[in-house]
Image 1 (cartoon, rainbow, N blue to C red):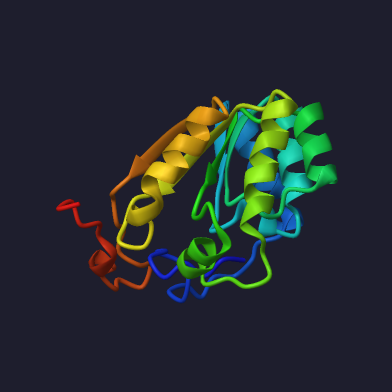
Image 2: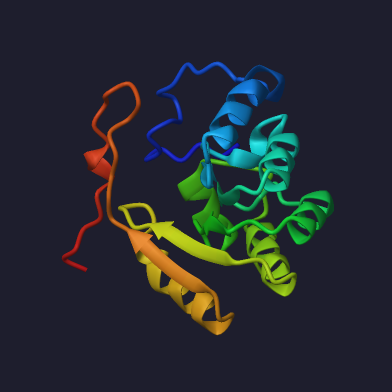
Length: 182
């Protein structure tokens, strides 16, 4: 639901969405063989039409689940699900502490940057292990300390990565590497 130009998937993948009904037997096989830990990612994991069913199934089967999200799609129903079946952790990417920066990084209009920050705080209030992260690159570097400070002020673990991954179709995205002269 975001179109970050440094993303290895956005504009570089022609993927087919696999539905829960198609993978349930495969998940059962993995669980029977001792599946202990699972990461739900994407792009944005919560975009998947069957996210809640998949997540609930994994948790009810005793699997530790971590989730990677941009935090924009978390709603009351999702918060209630996470409260009932807490994830091992949920990592949320922070892209802006103001609307202009957020829009520039995510190439998104119609999503309020404050919604992401509010959802992070709601997760924390519910006792969910939430961690914030930032891909440190040419688009996020000028706001980096604001992200870090916001997390420190709210007592939320924060980390960053300077790693730029090539796109799924092989295109190099190194043009987004951060300048460390600053």
